[in-house]
Image (cartoon, rainbow, N blue to C red; front, side):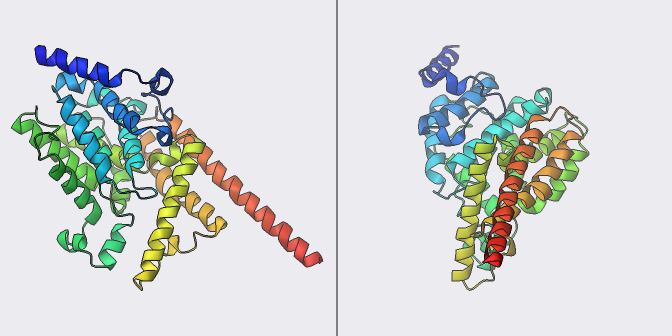
Length: 340
């Protein structure tokens, strides 16, 4: 169709001039450094992975609307150290790559791919840079609106759907009424599943996943994958993982400051992050007690899920090595002061 060839032309133009070295391995885990992407390259990454899933052709998606939409998404992410547009790009990309790494491409339908990638991109939109517990403790307007339940996740989902209500930003324009409802039915629970309060539930769900293709099983997979992608930065190559790790601690320290200013007790695990030893301990705890159990659970139905697990171990070793160096310095200092 004429519309189809126009779409193809726009995509070709959009992707033209991208350095081949940057995009050669967009479908391989750990091959994109999200911190190095220009604004245009970030948009190209999303368009490229949607196009690799053949979604523009299969669902006749409006490319121009996507360009408008991606601009709006970037504008609506705040300049937080961690919960920002870079984290959004990373989560969208890892959501897509998780399907590849677990070899479940055959299980997902076009609308599933769309929900997974777009949901990953918007899952933290307009994030304020602190967590649900802070919203609830300060009795914020969002906490009141959402009755203390998954406060920020509800806000992110609502913000996204409000964003696509204009003609120019409606990325689902080409979908039927039924398809729109289906995508919404998948995206909303998937964004809500990124609430850390549901982490244990995600582990159980993936451990017992039967690799079926029913609506419920596909949605469960998408929910777990989006949550996994959201906390997956420590399974990227060490330089990238470490940088994301530093940024999340920076944001925690800002929350600790806000808590002090509000006269609230400081959340224990973010109380002493100015101390290098505490920083290492927090990162190791996050890997050992949060990410690792989820990754091991994914390997139960998907034993082919290996590279992210190996990279997670490398990041763990980097933190453990840093911690050992700090301990050695401390004992050297003790010995030195003791002998003088």
